[in-house]
Image 1 (cartoon, rainbow, N blue to C red):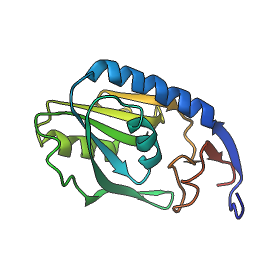
Image 2: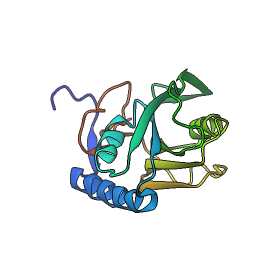
Image 3: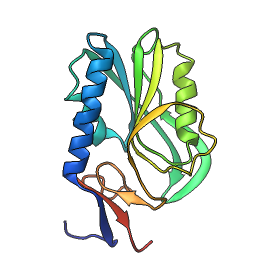
Image 4: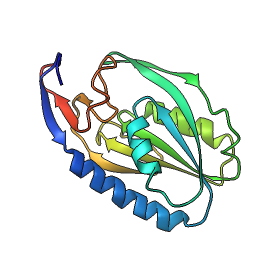
Length: 177
């Protein structure tokens, strides 16, 4: 890739990501079998993860998106702002999975979870691509994550810094913040 403004260090390879997504999809296919489920993915960071996971699921799925943010560049604004809430009736009385890119402090995901839970799903679970364990000691919801990552800024595979590097097919740490 040309025009990279940061020094990137490979953290998680394309092959590791693919293997973990296949493993997760197999678990979900077994867990939900013939049930129709709702997948709600959080824009924009989880779009690549969502697309790769959704294509490996065997059960009927309905999808919608939520757009929220609590960051400006690399800094937390400490306020969660909804830009888009669900627009389709796919939550009430259905099994619903929230597809998230990363659990950092857990504040944004807590806000999203509580909003979706208020719409009365049959079950509501969280699937995260990555988890910064130790950064969210007060996060109270059950979740599955594919990777534990260090408390550094990461990019690639949906993760970004100032909207750069989302399209990279591997996950990197930024080494020159």
